[in-house]
Length: 272
Image (cartoon, rainbow, N blue to C red; front, top):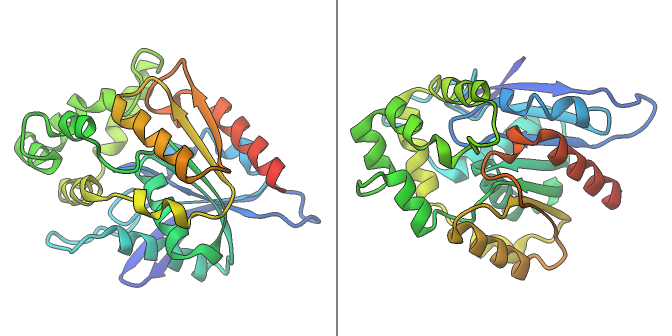
């Protein structure tokens, strides 16, 4: 995977293209979730790269991208600028944004901030903010998720909260182990900073700004917080497509990648 300089960071990315070269095709930008990396999209790429070019990248501090030092001032706005800088450097005018979990939060923020750079939006397993139950689940009896991670250490905190990220009853145990091992490659100071900014993020006020075709991939086997977010999305995104899975919980993009990619391809086919 090559790297490109974007401001103060080197972004590690991969651009897969198995489209018919004599035809025009769009670009799907895939944004991973909290402390993950571009490899989390591996099951999706073979299905999508024949339809569109597929651009995956590692968020700063994750995967093979540059690691900011301790004390760096993190913000979701800066992460959005990183994505913008990446597509600028690659000469890409518009993308179909596909984001999982916090990558979906970033998709809503990016679309609201740079509406002329996004053709469509797909959000998978994405809350609008940390609701009370999710906040409690990740706080583990501490003041907030950041305090829990600080007290327990990233390894223990990650292991004890893994069931909120992936449906253990449906996932191959080897997949769960792989997810944990990949997440733990993220430096602990980065993990602490990222959980703090995403625990505070709330993109629900931005929904009325989303005017492009949107697909929401979600599970009905989630807490009341998550289901309330779905209702808010349906209210403020009246023309969005919703694919709600009743037989699997968190971690849709990894547990049922074929069903997710089929829904994305159907969606892209409808919007042309």
